[in-house]
Each structure stands twice: as C-alpha cells, then as structure tokens.
Image 1 (cartoon, rainbow, N blue to C red):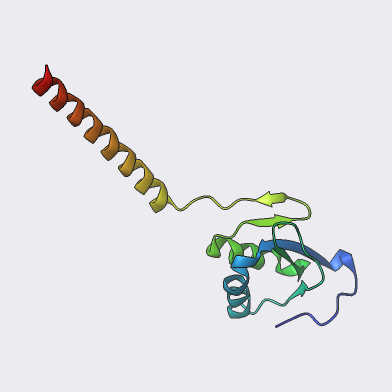
Image 2 (image 1 turned 180 degrees about the horizontal axis):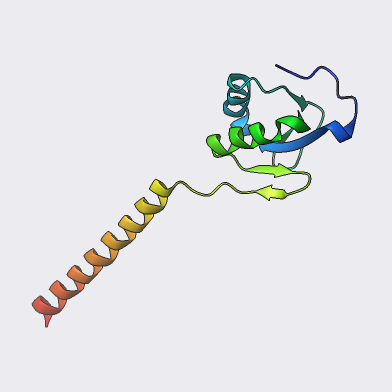
Length: 115
C-alpha cells in the first residue's frame, strides 16, 4: 500500500535503504500492511532509495527493517546499523580457531621431523 501524496513533513519521516534490499524490504512492508512512498527522483551516491512513512508507523517500520537485517540511513539517527547475525560471528570464531590449531600442529610436526 503506497501513500499517494505527502501533505506535511511533520507527519512523515524518511529512511534510505540500499537498492539491493528494495524487493525484500517492500515485501516485508506489504506483508505488515505498512503504507509507504519512495522517492523515484532521489538518488544517493550509494544507490540508496529514500522511503517516506507515517510517523505513527515508526515502530512497525523499525521492526520491518530489523527483521530483514537491512542497513538503514535515517534523517534523525544517521546510519542505523543492524548487527551481524550471531551465527555468522560464531562461524568466524570457529574458522579462526581451526586455522590456529592447524598452524600449531603443522609447526610442531615440522620441528619434530626437521629438527
């Protein structure tokens, strides 16, 4: 559901999201029945798209972009980062530990056989 006309800036707020997340974000907005308008003429250097929402929907919009894990730029908060998923962080930790253990084992084997 799109907002046809924006009457006053006081009743609306805007967010910018990356172009690559447009379909996923709009699908989430439509599923949550949140009205929005995107500015087709506005373009940021990073190919972000500016969306306008009603002020009363701010909490629901925040839930939408957080559940999609989208990087958002807003007028009042600047860059709103969504943290990396915990599973991805655990993966990095496991890979790092495996690399260190393999390095130690190879070092020990080299010192035993060359030494």
